[in-house]
Amino acid sequence: MSDESDGLDLLRELAFGYDRDFPFNADTAPAGEGGGMQVERFEITSRYEERVSGLLLQPADAEGPRPLVLVGHPGTLDKSSDYVLWPAEQWVGRGAICATIDQAGHGERAKRPVGMEDFQKWPMRRLDQSIQTVVDWMRVLDYLSERPEVDAERVGFVGFSMGGMRGAPFVGLDERVKAASFCISGASTLSGRGGSAGALANRLTDPGIYAPMMAGRAIQVVAGERDDLITPEATQRFFDQLSEPRELVWLPCGHWDFMPQGIRPVGPFLERQLGFGDG
Image (cartoon, rainbow, N blue to C red; front, side):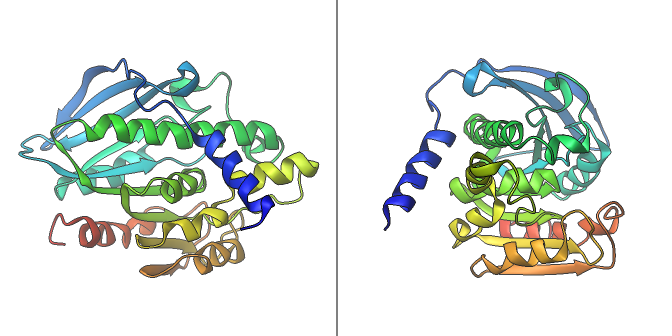
C-alpha cells in the first residue's frame, strides 16, 4: 500500500470518525397514524452537537424485530417530502420499518433556502455537509439498532439523487448495511473544481471511491437513460466499480421524471435481500 493511500485512509478515518458512546439525547413524539401505519418523529445528537431530525414509519401492528430501510431524500427536499414518504409507506405496508432524516443543510436543519448551486458551486461546503450526513446516518443506525422493533441484522439503504451520492460513503464504510439501492445517483461529476483542495474533497466523498468497499453486499443501481444531471456515464462508472451481487436497471426517463416508475424495481429488490413481504 502506498504512502498516499495510507494517508487517504487515515484522512478518511478522521473525517468520518465519531464518539460512538456519545449520548443520543433522543426526543420522540407521535407524528401520525392511519392505514395500518404509525409515524414517529425522532431527534438525536450527532457529531459537533448537530441535532438530527427524522421520521420512523412502521406497521401499526408490528410484532417482533423487522427489517429496517433507511431512505435518503434528494437535494433541496427533506424527510417529509412525498418523494421519500410515498415509497417508504409502500415498503412499510409490506412489513418493513423505514426511517428518513433531514440531511445536513436540509429541512429543519437548513439555515437558508437550498438551491442547486449548493451542490455545484462550493466544494468545501459540499464536503462539510456530505461528511456530516454520512456520520448522521451512522449515528441514526446506532440509535435505531438499539430499538426492539428493529432487526439490526437486516438493514437496507435507498438513496435518491443527492441521497444516494451522500449515502454511498455511508454504505461503503458501514458494513451493517446489508443491501442498498442507489437511484439516479452515480460517481461524482464534479472533479476538477476547487483546485487541489477541491480535488481532495471530491476524493473523500466521490461515490465511485466507495463502491469497491461495498463488496459482499447486494447493490442495486436504478438510473434514467436520459438523465442530464447524473449522466449515464457517471452511473455506469459507479456501477463498474461494484462487485457481485449487483444489478443495474435502466429506465426510459431522465432525472426529473424518475418518479413514480423509478421505485418499481426497488421494492422487490429490498424484499429479496432483507426478507420481508413475499421476498
